[in-house]
Image (cartoon, rainbow, N blue to C red; front, side, top):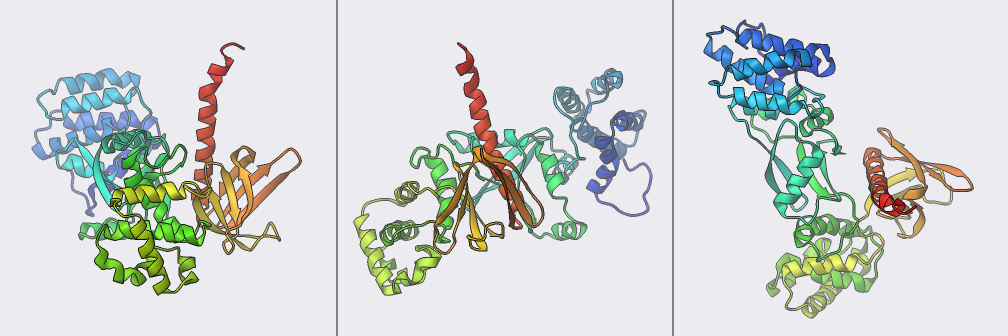
Length: 435
């Protein structure tokens, strides 16, 4: 609280970590923190010290409540200081914590910064696949599931189901657990190193962003939810098509190239001359040499002319409707190395869809095998591998792959399985009503 000098200057969040960190892990220390804050704010005439005391009380009341023995005393303390601007808010936060789980980590940098600026509202930037972003209000007890619903509501999506929040760091992309508090998730998955903190303080961009995107591709019907189509479905699916993950015919590629060209230029025919230079944005990467640039140009112009009269938005929906007929629509693709099956290539694509897990030959795009979720009994991952167990009436097989994205694969498979289990439980009572 600034009552005593410290030898070495430390940031505010380093100090709050020292104060609240042990208490979030040890129940007996929680009351001690409340007692120390109240004691130092009693008969204290130092304005700066009192201001910092209330800031600490604000942070504390959003992390955990006092025990039942201390609760009445704490409540009386806060109620008797009704003239202090933060007193009522601290009381409300403390009482609110009685009905929810306590936080598992000390306050996040954003929470500390906000209360130091005397702000009780926190807005966090969330990024979307279409290179857009928006600010959303979060509190100390906002859970990932609650933030998902808030985002869906603010964007006017038809439903929050199937979407996920992710933390993108310089090294990896991490899926955030629906049941955890938002700020706990940020602290658990990415505590900014001191070197990066100094870069941030120097004004450089944050190395961490929160992303919101489609995660589970069930009940996705292009044209049904246009906000979802334009903000998520098109910007997520178009790059996968251009990377060459789908098996498609020459006619498919010409039709889709015409639609993607319209998305790029709208009705500006003067851009025809630029088509040879734009091919990487119109045609799958592995099919560029299927025709000469001039022949591609001729075919794309013909396709574009056949689609005359449609808008950019209509072209995006038409693109999604076209590829939604393919079994690989909505799949997440991972390139992995395998040695467990000699008849398969050493490098395969492991794709995860709403049907299950597929192994695909990346050269021929031939489906090698499909494992439905009902047969996947276990999956886990490490820093450089992914493993899953497939069971059937005859035998049990364990599939092991080399990959640095095993955590993403494990999370996605478990999310699909959880979704189907929730659906099954939702219908179970109805089916058992007359049994």
